[in-house]
Length: 138
Image (cartoon, rainbow, N blue to C red):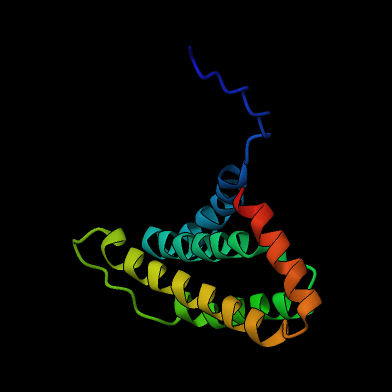
């Protein structure tokens, strides 16, 4: 009469957001102490976006080019946070930092996807990558 589906085994919770927040809190306080709160918030948003993009592509962590892309991205962001003159007006910091963060996420994800297409030409590497990404999406 009733279709009863057996409950799926529960997966352990993913604490990635808590880990990212724990890593970014000291960065925020350090930059706020050294500069000001607006620059600290901008740095945290940009670093958080980088960490989320890395988390989405974490299945590629066994490739050396993955770590090279992360290093290049981090080096390119130092001037973005410290040299770019962020507006210091009456508007909220999120109004100008969040769109930059979203575009930044898309660029970083595009770089990972492009590198994956270029460097994983071998079918066995692609099969492993696709298997890892299918496991990641479940």
